[in-house]
Amino acid sequence: MLVGTYKGTTGIRQESAKKWLTGRLTQITATARPTALDIGCADGTHSRVLSALGYAVTGVDFSAPMIAAARELSDDATLPHKPRLLHGEFLAGRYVDDQGAEAPLDGERFDLVLATAFVHLFPPEADDDAVRKVLRHVTPGGKALISTTADVADRQGLEIKAGADGLTAQRWRNHYTAESFTWLVGEAARDVYGVKVKVRPREITDPDVDGKVWIDVVVDRPA
Image (cartoon, one colour):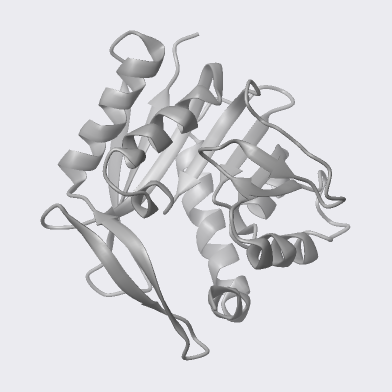
């Protein structure tokens, strides 16, 4: 359902993603040959932007149609490093590549780990686990960038998601205030790294949707 929606807005989302990431990447340390993990990569929009910026990118997503779309869109000779795109379930850590071969990521670390509009799809307590696993993939001295929409109150439950093709699907959705999401990420970082970690939240008004505000949190993993 959502693949059709994504395909219909590829160009717009690509430009928006580039503006957002380049604005935030000024605060994100990258090595001479940086690596990035794009969690919940969907059609690979952020993976392609990061690749164009010089990152060696691995993108993962649970949806087979989304990964298929990401592979199709990333078949682009202009990208300096074609993203490695894997299909699988994040918490289980089981993935397969485009040849169907197993491609486990547990133990791999990256200079930048991106989880955009991802953590809020997990029910309570599992969202804690998801944030912790996101943060474990960050190399010492690296960064994580975790984002969701900011709401006026915390709430959760099953919601209907509509696609551009008119089809709908039911899915779980957490809604966080900016304060509660920042707290969630900060507590997970302290649990994973064993020390209180600097987290840097920022609220951003969505230029395309009236009244929609995003909260993204940068986490600096101690070296």
